[in-house]
Amino acid sequence: MSEYGLRIANFEAGSIYEVMTGVRNRYDTTEAMFTHSLFSDFIKENGLNIHKGESTRDIICVEFNYGSRSLAEEKAHRYRSLCDAGGELDKAFATNNLNRISAAYLKMERVKYMYDHVEDAAGQYEKKSANELREMFYENGIDIWYGKNKIHYCMLYRTPGKAKKGSCMFIRQSLYKRARDFLYMGIKLPKKNAPLVEIGAYSSLVTSAIENRIRIEPENILILKDVDAVFNTRVLAVDVDAQGRCFAEYKENYPLKNTMFDGQALIDEGVFPDYGNGYILLRQHFCKMAAFVSRIQLFFKDKYGEDYETAEVTDMFGIKHRVKDIKLITTDNACKWLKFHITYKYWCDWVHKNDCLFGVVKTAHESKMGEYQRMSYQMINSLDVNNMNGVMTDTVNYILQLKRDDGVFLDFLDRNKNFSNDYEPLVRICQKNPSFVRSDYYRERKRVIIREYVKRVKFGKVLQNADNLVIVGSPYAMLLHAVGESALSDPTFAQEKSAIQCWTERFSDGEYLAEFRSPFNSRNNLGFLHNKSHPLLRKYFPFGKQIIAINMIGTETQDRNNGLTHWPSSQKCA
Image (cartoon, rainbow, N blue to C red; front, top):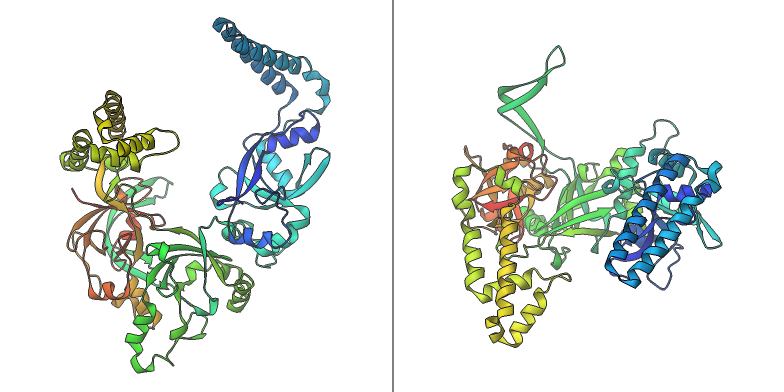
């Protein structure tokens, strides 16, 4: 079995329908991957047939990039193919290469035969749009022939990431019921006004590709109601007048309300995996959360002292938990099962059925370029032209180092090697024979590689002392909230007039930072941060260098960054 999962077939819906109607004799397919996930763990133990440990036909992916053609469209298509084949044959004759001429001639004959016989199935052509096929296949399923054997598949799920393309996963009919029951967590939908979009999005969370798994008993998770932070500030508000026309106006003391811990969690360092680098993105049944390593138990010990062994806190359901048992703290916004009116116990029972395993979808990673990170042209365009000299300083110095220092150049090759370039062989040769750097071949390759790198820089790939850091919002406020104290009384951050306070070990205490949301949309996604350390943050949050904590209380951070649902890039100001 591949480290990524099982190989499956990816079918085009239009080709499936045309095979069904008899106007085509083969499917358009590519290879796809049924990745490791909590769902794949389940279905492998519940009847999935695996061929030679590396592939399966029980699950297929179907994409809806095109529909089926009418007879007139098929004629036009085959005529274009005939013209293209004729052009290839002419080019082959011009080369005087017998093998190429023979191959082009055979292709020409094959395409001509297909064109001449397009009328053979004239009554079977039926035009269907991709949307029509989607509706048909979702409702009725599809039949796929493998030689003389036929498998009937039922539509199982469509992941949110594929929503625009409409591609989805189908499963063998005999496995459908148990697979759907697992994904839906046994939830029965009403026949009228069923929340199909919501359950489709949240049931597929357990199908997310995972890197690893960790075990957390659901009873050891403290689920709290999230906290709204409201403050007044000056905004440019867009509104609609009586005639339905949009207009914008500045408003003073406008109340902004933000949800502080939306989708966020704190996880005790006792269960946090070493490979996480301070952050893991978790998935379970109807549950997703970004969990950040914390010393939860140390905080409880300091808070309750001699009463630590018997101290209890109450979750949002009124259930008491002994503080010494709590391994993870999160809020209701991470628990999508609450939208379907099921009980806390019901969810816990389903997590236990899955052996209390949570899938780790992502972890934090440092830049491949060490302390440097590349900017994008969108970031460059958001800055004042008068700042360009400072912005370009690190990049210009690096290019000069590449030209002058073979050690820096070989390190560049080693960091950027892949299967399609010759960087690794160059590094190996130079390691084996250092004098190779004086050869004409090495000097020419070095000149060409640096020239190509400079071209990329001109497209905005400018180096900065920066990295992609994962944001956690006011983490100490979350600990206070867990013990019933006001999250808004968090003493670890203060409001500043010109900047928003943050804390990260990636940069020095007291430094001012430019923060770019990723993906970066416009100048409104650009923030100005002030890195301020606090003893409580250092004591309870061993985040490391890949995490940045930002003050969410009385600041416009979330509004400026579209809710901070992505990884922002925090960069040192030039």
